Image 1 (cartoon, one colour):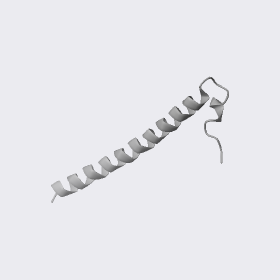
Image 2 (cartoon, one colour):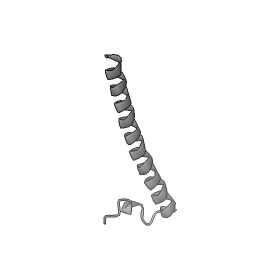
Image 3 (tube, one colour):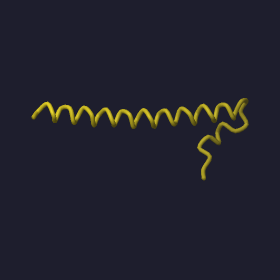
Amino acid sequence: GVDKYEFLNGLESDDRLKNTALRLDRLTRQTYVQSKSFDEVTSVSKTAGDM
């Protein structure tokens, strides 16, 4: 595979930077999924309110 964080190689504390970048990417994905879930709840709520 491709090392998405290759640009961090050779920097001071590169392992820590890679770990932090990976965690940030995971949080970004989780936030996106949560946002989509809230959108769905809002949509269902509006539909139920129209009944």
